[in-house]
Image (cartoon, rainbow, N blue to C red):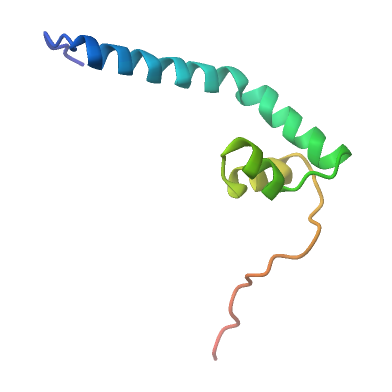
Length: 86
């Protein structure tokens, strides 16, 4: 990919650096967060909703972690596939 001669303003450079730090920090904690989430759901009874509220991440994110970590569902899903109308 070609590079331009673009040089960001000081304000833009500061904001872009901040975003880069956030992305780097998030990548650094991704695996420890996953491991902790599985442990908390399995051992401490945390729900996907609890973890979503505490982290700002989505419940779906933690549902996927729970399924991959072998965490049993507490209840069946409330949305089901519709039966075929034959």
